[in-house]
Length: 128
Figure 1 (tube, helix red, strand yellow):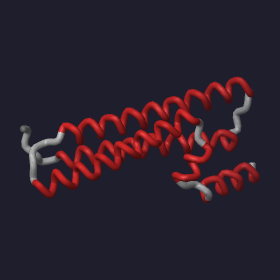
Figure 2 (spheres, rainbow, N blue to C red):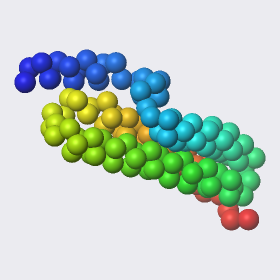
Figure 3 (cartoon, rainbow, N blue to C red):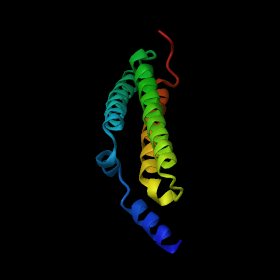
Figure 4 (cartoon, one colour):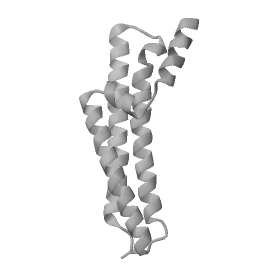
């Protein structure tokens, strides 16, 4: 048990979003790119809308939803693939699947952050 704990701590210390991107499957990499792109667009649009004190931005709302749903899709895909792998290998030790769990959490967390940026960017704006 002690070896598993030490290995888990080592994995968590090496955790970064770029590390997650390096180990992700091609589909999850695509979802990360979509979420990051939606995040950049949402951040720029939110800043511009706040500075101009303009009406609600439908682009901002759309980027928030795209970021959230792409994050959910990436996390769901990773969780499903991890479950199917664990079932096929009959392996129950968490330390083996920890990188995939971290990957799913990162994709989902990034999607939620993009969604919150979009919601806060449109907060208090009048409908056009």
